[in-house]
Length: 287
Length: 276
Image (cartoon, rainbow over all chains, first blue to last red; front, top):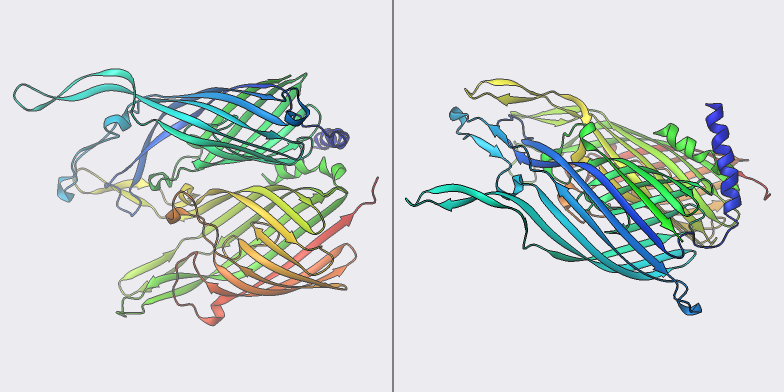
């Protein structure tokens, strides 16, 4: 324990040395690539539970990856703080394993399967974004637009048979949906990067396209090469994460470990502790 | 979690020139509302269960006014049951925990501190039987204390101080300093330092509504309170008394006068280092 405390004391001394610097650490060009994983849940109401909480769920794996590039400065004194950039993120989710529930005739409950239709099928999402703003020592503000293009894995389609009854036909596989959206993206950092600071962001940096697109973090630089983020998301799930960063010669490696606190769905009031864990990692290079 | 926060704060003993530790404990009644079956109109009543809170916050400020800190607050609500005619109204035993971290800048006349907190609800779930195909009941979900994800949140925290700390000043606080997670999560305090004493009056407000769904939003009661803090060197002891205005957390039923009262005690330590 004493050794651990000594290490942190040394890191603290390095932190004090850093506070004398007065330059945004993220000035210049920056390229970030990231990827992550979470457990995607699909909830449903199961009337076989006797109490008031009928919520139940099934789950599947979901992955995401992304890239973001940012450029700052355009050779003019007046444009030194000006930033422009763009990014893309891709999300992929497997089909849900259907849950088949028996009928309870005495209570009038029919046999049921969850989830059904497109909700049961795997889906994907491609986000493409552009943004611009200013990055000063004390703050950074960047605004932009993100296009969300969504699709799904159509495994079956319902068809009319020759006798007029309904039947199943093979689906078309992975297809684009018609529910694309254009949303604003947003990034605000308050506080210099060489001392503890806070960042609020929507669809920016290392985000989870479905479970964590609105997030915030407090960054604590402990030394020139080591920093800690304590953060969380607000949409579509509430979450907590801890993210250590290691930097070396412009390269920055981080690992984000966290857990979902709240799925914003009444069917998920009692989700197992381990099912809520998620992990992601990012590698960036600044020059 | 607390150990992790303490570890993170160790390097800041070097970073900060002013270090303060604030702890508090609070006792109130939680008034669980129910609709009395004996009345046809004006039938919202409530029954009280004991509620206790404690909090600890460490805050460091450099000579340039840069601020970093972290805290932990916890509120425990005792379980209770009231038989209302043929219906039993229950308040489950609940423990609310709230670790948080913040950064900020003190410009003397204005101090703005922003951060993040994680509101975690652990509550006593009742056992939930599951219906078999033949209509009989099987063991379903087990009862007992468990994490209620539906009532857990990530939330911003903030403290905005207007006017210098040495004189009369105002504080707007969400999840900061001394607070109960149920009674005064979001509050405004007017503070008047007078020699070794510091007098205060505060009003706790409705929490900001969740932008996704107000049905599942973080809620808090509203109270009015006054307090006094006695400073002796680097130490300070204080007491606050408060009165419940709006029992929103457990439903709005009529609440007796004695069950609206709350009492909190504070203990703080503040050390200003000489500049290196």
